[in-house]
Length: 605
Ligand SMILES: Cc1ncc(COP(=O)(O)O)c(C=O)c1O
Image 1: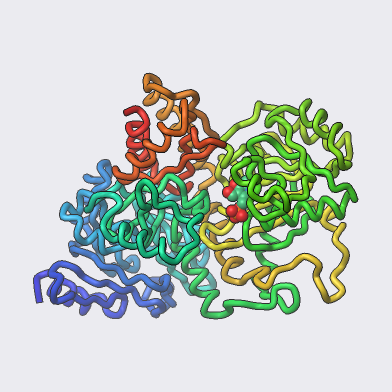
Image 2: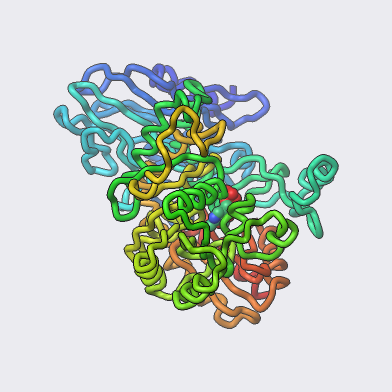
């Protein structure tokens, strides 16, 4: 047994059942630590209490050192992200848990980081001091954790300037201690050329078996993702990237947010599938209630849960027809509402529409985005009577286009005047992306219908059409046969993920972080690209950011270069002349800045 192993063994004796550890023979220095999922532990003043930690807390740690030493080092190296703290201890005034985290400089070899999610994860801990029967205090945080809040994120703690954080509460003499894992963002780390040999080989295999319109392998093959955490993605060749796309704007709480993963694991073990519109899962009720509470403007809200963003748009279009009896729809130039046939009718880009024109109902007329007068004009010449206007409050795939201030509220007023429904497609912009829960809230606009997907779950295919109850009640009561449903409607794991993701967004104040970090990032991008050639505009709201260029070639080249330097970004806009950035809202500011600098460099060359 090597010295690390011995140290762990000694500590184990001391720490009892809190931690199990093992040292791999062929990996000297790597220690597999596991926190027991549920244990009774002695807490002074509270007797023996149950200790609960998330499942899957097995971590590989590369070094163990005394808490005090680790804490000193942690303070010293905070500034450069290099921290390594491993601590197991029990004190008279609290319970010692495990604090393990390390960053770039803590692990110069990088070997453990590549294999080890703990490289990015911080395993919670704190010194817990019972305070009567109402509160626990976390030592380093020195702030009371209110009754009932068993968890607090490391980010919250950092926001109050502490590296420690709270995690306990005391209820009627018993204490629950929850370990919290916060995934930190790491810089890119490349170990092969990009794409690496494994990605190249997979691309060749895929080309044999996948429809050729799907994954683009020309001129360079893609990287194949193997795992992701927070704002980082690892590919099959072991390269670590910063994801400035959040996987198409999905991972708002971060990839594989521990809370979402926990909720999914728990839900999957209990109930994987139910009968969505006949004998549904209980979690469907919880999610619809949570979504109703979030509906912009409040008021009675009803929803229907579906699978994709296009599904939500389809349901909105059907609702509008039922509610108004008028089939005509006004959408906007540059709009993207999905590719299923109904949604495609409202999607602008000819590339998507033309091959299928013969199957499109042609019920949509397109107005200039941001121009209310033009809405009136196209509605006037629409062959069908208009029942609704569908709008992205900020166009996403159309190139992160932000309409002039007042546009949305003027559109709301116009819809009210004409008796048209206003459908906000917030598939891209929802759940904090733009620095508000929903982008229409920037102008205080209450839509009649709202489409949500992507960031709703931070990673599961679930969408929702939400709407004012009086509008949604255009749907007839179900007589046992729902007229708009799906086999997987209200899928339980998706619902559980959505609830967990919304809770994480709220607890970690990710909406506020998106607003704050987005504003800083925009200023930085503008400064770094001020003298770069071929830049037409740099814009954004919250963490929906974009650089419009003089043509698609510059953007394409920049995406390839950025990827080769470990940053994932995507083109957007009708002809691909916009480089878009939609990172997880949880991305650490320094890593966001670093990744944007890499992307700016790639653009400026
Ligand atoms: C605004 C908007 N609406 C709808 C969709 C379609 O969503 P999905 O691809 O999940 O069908 C998208 C997808 O990017 C979108 O950005």
